[in-house]
Figure (cartoon, rainbow, N blue to C red):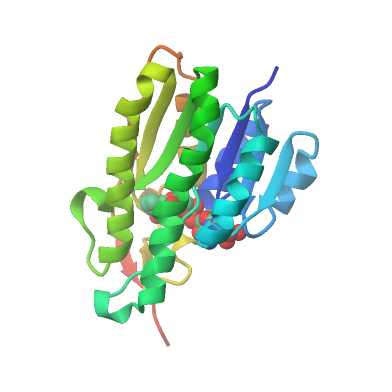
Length: 238
Ligand SMILES: NC(=O)c1ccc[n+]([C@@H]2O[C@H](COP(=O)([O-])OP(=O)(O)OC[C@H]3O[C@@H](n4cnc5c(N)ncnc54)[C@H](OP(=O)(O)O)[C@@H]3O)[C@@H](O)[C@H]2O)c1
C-alpha cells in the first residue's frame, strides 16, 4: 500500500517540487493551496487530490479542518510548505498585513498539525516535516514579521519533536536559505542569478524525501540547505 502525504503550498515552488518527487515515487498526495496544481493533477490524476484552501483565513480553516481530518484518515505524513514573504520596516506593515502573514506562515501550520495529530497518535505513527528559514537563526533586515513566523515555527517544531516521540511520530524541519521560487516575486530583493546563488526546489524535495524514507526508529531532525554562495541583489524598480 502506498503512503499518503499531505503537502501544503502545492501550487508552486517547494511544495510543488515535494509533491512531484513523492508522486514520481508511488506516493499518494493530498495537496493544499488556493490555486490548483494543474500540472500535477494532469500527470498523476490517480494519486493526486487537490484541496483548494486559503490558509490565512483561520475562521474558515477551523471549520474545514475537522472535515479534512475525517476525509483523509490515512494521512501518513504532512509536509508544511505553504507560506510567503513580505518584507519592510515594521511600521510599513498594516495591522491586517501582520495578521495575514502570521496566520498563513505560523498559525495555519499549528492548526493543521493540531487537527491531524490525534489520528497519527492513535495510529502510533506519522511524520511532520516543516519548511523553516535560515533567517530564523540570524534575523533579517526588514524581515521582523516574516522572521518571527519562522523563529516561532522553529520553536514549535523542536517542542513538538519532544512531545510526539513517545507516540511514534517523527518531526523534522528543513532550514532553507534563498531558493529559486515565486517567493521573491513581490520583494525588492532576490538571490543572485548564478546557479550557485540559490537552492532549487528539487534540492529541497530530495531532502524531504530522504526524511520521509528514514527508518521509523530514527529521526532526521533538521536539514539545512543554503546556496553555495549567498548573494542578494536589489531589484530595479523603474
Ligand atoms: N524561497 C525561499 O528563498 C525560501 C527561503 C526560506 C524559507 N522559505 C519557505 O519555503 C516555503 C515555500 O515557499 P516557496 O519558496 O516555495 O514560495 P512560493 O513558490 O511562493 O510558494 C508558496 C506556496 O504557498 C502557498 N500559499 C501562500 N499563501 C497561502 C494561503 N493563504 N493559503 C494557502 N496556500 C498559500 C502558495 O499557494 P497559493 O498561492 O496557490 O495559495 C504556494 O503554493 C515558505 O514557507 C517559505 O517561507 C522559502
